[in-house]
Length: 402
Image (cartoon, rainbow, N blue to C red; front, side):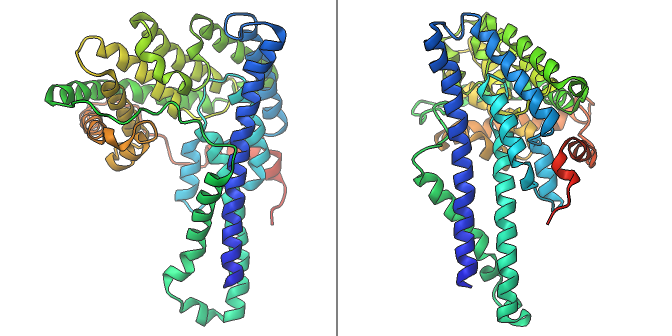
């Protein structure tokens, strides 16, 4: 059993090291591309030709990755579907997910971090699970099947818990590769009265239908295969297109994390532009082969609308922003208040718990009303078509596994 526990601890540490290394790689390349190199060329990266050159180069890299490595990382929905049906993320896709994510995230792509981490850490977790499974087989043989099966269920699950705890400890201990959480709101120390709650619930309810359609259109764009005709050229065209949108306001670039706390300082017309352009840039990016998650970009778009909406009311803008983010979370998790609450905590501390609950409830009520009225897009069909598309596109899936 000692060998099994050691394997679990080392496996968890390995997964944490993979995650930290990936985060460090993204941050290092992003800093080099958008800060170090522009200084060497004596240009402003956001008010010169650099703003267009970097996404175009990134689009070429995205196209090369799509052509030679495959359409990875997979989307969050596909990953969740795999796990729900007992599947796993193939660890052979880690190199493809890493390269494509670096090209998309570090070169200004208006996509989120979550798909990359899901694909890379999920693949590493599969490797860890396979190692634990092999050692568990040896332990079963050594103990005897009957004796091993007679152990308490907690004992048999303990290796997985050890791997998880080990991963968290190692991730915290590694001196590099921490996620930048500067976008999170500070603890709430103001008042949240009935009138504030009504404004938050109203905004959360109002955005449910447009957010549902926005997410649907992003999913359709992501599953389009048009870019495969010429991945490099179309990837470059996509980079140029969202760079043009960012020429009006650079906050359109990246996922929006760096701009979330700046929204209250932005004029109302600019807020409306950012909200629409950020979503449009996300659609353009994923349609042209750039890969990343939609969660934070949609958070950011709704936060911009929330800030503009709040200009009509004497309410702390943080309350409306977080209520809007709770509404987006409700749509992403399809109505589940508890998982939506937990997802919203990514942006806001537990001190905003009451605000998140109000936003979730308002959005859930709006969903319940809108669904029978036919105002929402049809839910995605649960099929393997998207997985098959990935299999067709990825060379690794045509090789025999272990």
